[in-house]
Structure formats: C-alpha cells, structure tokens
Amino acid sequence: MRLAVALLALALAGCAAGGPPRGGPGGPALKPIAQPGDVVAAELAFANMAQEEGQWTAFREYAAEDGVMFVPQMVNAKDWLKKRENPAQAVAWQPHEVWSSCDGSVSVTRGAWQRPDGSTGWFTTVWQRQKDGEYRWLMDHGDTLAKPLAEPELIDAHVADCPQQPWPPAQELLQAVPGNGEFFGGSSDDRTLRWGGRVDQWGGRIVTVDVWDGGQFQRVLHQTVAPPKAGE
Image 1 (cartoon, rainbow, N blue to C red):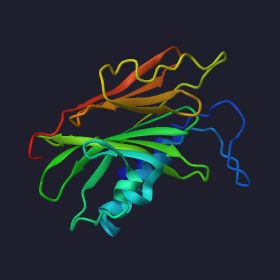
Image 2: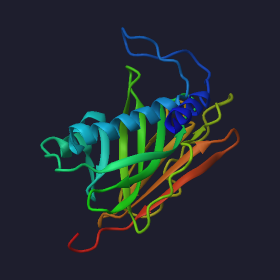
Image 3: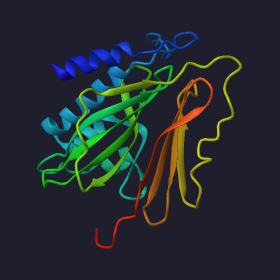
Image 4: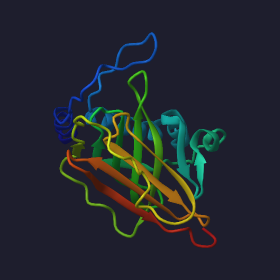
C-alpha cells in the first residue's frame, strides 16, 4: 500500500513543459512532461528483473546504448555486460528519491542497495526517456556504506522548474568538478537538469547533479567515490 501511495504522489508531481510534443519518426508524439512516477516504476521493474532473471541480465536490458558504469574505470555498459554471467544471487535495491527535468527527458534516482553477503550501500542512476517512451539508464554508480540508509516513508519526488524565455542559460556542466581525469555528463533536452563528473586514473570519481529552480541551478547531488584499495 505504501508503494502505491508513493507512486500516486509521484504521478501528481508531474510538471508540463512548454513546446510541442516530440516523438520518433513514424511513432507517437511524446509530450514533454515530467513523469517521476514512471521513472520510479522503471527502477522498480529493473530491480525486480534482477531478482527474477539475473543481475546482469537486468542491467543489460535496462542500459541505454551509450550507458556508462564504473568497474572502477568508466566503461560502456553494453560492451562490459555483453558476456557477463549472472551471480548466483543478485544485489537488491530500492529507490528513495527522484529528480526530473521539466520535460521528463532525463531523471535521476537515488537509493539503497543490499548484497547477499550482508554488505550495503547507496546508488545513483541517471535515466533517459527513449523515443518509445520507455526509460533506460545512462549512468549507474554507487558505493558501500558502513550503516544502511534509512528507508523513507515515501519516495521523495522533485521536478525542475520549467524554463522561461529567453532560454537556455549558459551550460557549464562540469565547472564544479575540477581536476584531471576522464570527464562525462549531459543534460535533459530542455536543459533544466544536468549531470556530470569525472573519473581519475586510480578509479576514484565525482558525480554531480544540478536542477533548475526558476532562477538558477541548484546542486542536488555531489557524490565522491574513493579509488578502490589495493587488492579489491
């Protein structure tokens, strides 16, 4: 029941953006509307497939063609997962929070994971809406925690303010991620949500997410993952 209430609240949090509907050639037009409930539903279906059909099977199914993950260096997810065999037991995870661009083209989820060995941690996933309306992940990353995250009563949903003309503002995706390394990132179609970061030569990384609040970008996530220790 709590999940049903959470998804209803997320659906009501949707925000219509300006501009004409968009869609692929020959396909139905997609309305530029934030639908955080659909993103959470995709995350839950992704987690459920991992339990029922295998961890890497689910990751392959839900990865975008240019999706990236970290092992710890950044790799193309489709390539890395191509021949990866599923572990005997899959990791479990639950979304706790979601941010969406005004037009719904890109969203970000944050939550908790648990491994069968008892270890626990956090994850962040960047989701992109495809031409057929389905969501696939562009980036997946996370880290371990000494103590598990507290489970929220409801999944918290946030939607970027819709842009006003003139638009867009100057886009400096990685300005606040200094240092050398391999950079990555992107933004929603309407440029109201941007994400990016870098991974250094040792496998450490920084990921940031900014959301437009009507007057400026607000940093909603700034996550640092240390390089793995020798032997890990």
